[in-house]
Length: 257
Image 1 (cartoon, rainbow, N blue to C red):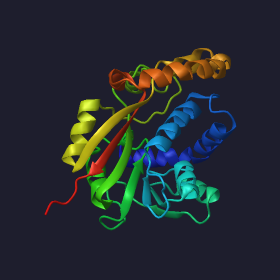
Image 2 (image 1 turned 45 degrees about the horizontal axis):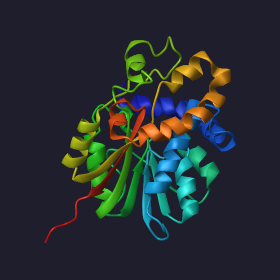
Image 3 (image 1 turned 60 degrees about the vertical axis):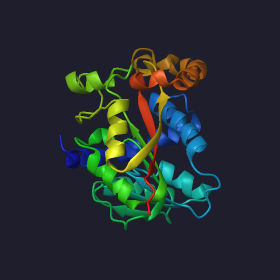
């Protein structure tokens, strides 16, 4: 499937994504999706600049606007771009004043050096080649600007990369063919785009999705107990290659005189 297929699929699922993010506000341990976003939100809160007031932030692939709304409320001058009009409609319901643009994430409709921070959550996995996107992120970042981008390692312990290749429909997951990486390859692609990698953090770890699939009623209690273990494991660099999600932290190279 192509990037166009991914946009079409996510357009059909826009309301589902809104409900999934609403669950995060009610009980972040109710589903694996909510739990993964809780873990990501906690990590972002630690890594994003403070104070944010006046800093220009772009959310690439902003979807239904979850991160965009939170970051704008915290003081960022935030803008979002997404390929799906349906996703952007959901984002506007969250914040009617949001600065949103519909466009191709590999050809961002913004001037060079326009942003202090670029956030890109769960976009690389839908691109057969993520390097054009990373090059565009580098272009719209000011020199020294911060890039925060997620990716999924191919050795993830939840087994999703294997499921995606072999039996997505049989197991009721997204039919989109997705693309996975490694810590080393992610660092390489960032560096080639002109983004100096500072760290690659595991976001959450372990076969938790299989608990949700096999014992759904026990999932919330399990995740509440698991989270302390998860946080300890994700603090270790060795967890990266088998994590369920990675968050890369990089900066655009400074211009040298």
